[in-house]
Image (cartoon, rainbow, N blue to C red):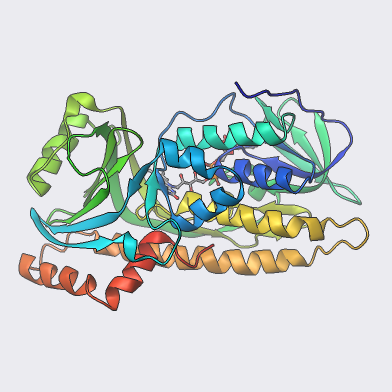
Length: 388
Ligand SMILES: Cc1cc2nc3c(=O)[nH]c(=O)nc-3n(C[C@H](O)[C@H](O)[C@H](O)COP(=O)(O)OP(=O)(O)OC[C@H]3O[C@@H](n4cnc5c(N)ncnc54)[C@H](O)[C@@H]3O)c2cc1C
């Protein structure tokens, strides 16, 4: 059991963080390692139980190595070493991640609630009094030398900077008057987690079908996630429908009785107009939202956290503070968010139905994409190389 102390809200903390999602938690771990005092405020009493995000890419595994988190992630996650492409029911080719020049040439998959629990345990190991659950940030005011966060119960906490890691609907972003620019794509998906019934735990499968994309990913200890593109928004997806649709489109299907999670989602592309403004800094989904297809959002937030944690000691340096480094943070992370959004858009377009294209033509395109040099580019796209 990890020890958690009551946070001390008095005094001035160099960094206040709104949100204990993946971004806020990793930022906390990295600040604790640098001995920078901070406090995280999170309205939820415990980690979210939704298994939203499952894909952890090689550059994030490298970050976990540096933060002492890797062993636990490797133990609890599932390693995907290759992706197999199908056109309708037919296998067309495989892309192997072992071709990556990286110490961790695989994508690790596990539910977001387990990911968040591992991060939170590490955070509390390093800084037991750094996490305040049950109170979100309701507002803030700027002072001469810093910022005062006002919590839901009206408690005021003083800091030098406030990091908004409070997700897509970030209150910090809104109160800071930073616009969220972008829009919504017409695409809709349903997804469900089912007990594994396919004998290849190290393989992701992507089916380009005449009725639209189907993806299936093994994750955690014994689960497989099925993601199915739908022509319209389905508010209450059903396990039986997913199983039937998977069977019709791909020739394989999960057992509907074994379903442990169902949800549906649409797709947006949004980027904050500014990533910082007068003592407020944005990170993670608060700063950028990309399509879940391709599984990049959580990883992108971690790369924000890593860069910010590296810059904050200089930004906060009591002898010679360097707030202008935030321009570098904004420039680099905006570029990464743009690149990730472009990659996500490529995935989205590839997954559309294209009923007018014959199966032969689709197979030919996929086959060519899996040959060098296109294969090398795809490999980088799928594994978020260069976005950290
Ligand atoms: C269906 C789906 C599948 C996905 N799959 C993947 C994947 O495989 N790989 C991947 O990389 N990404 C994936 N993503 C994206 C990923 O889930 C997000 O990018 C990630 O959760 C963002 O983390 P975050 O910490 O920035 O924000 P969040 O996870 O949204 O966390 C924000 C936290 O802030 C808290 N909060 C809210 N308001 C306040 C407030 N006022 N004060 C304080 N705290 C507040 C919230 O309670 C929450 O805990 C997926 C998304 C979806 C929808």
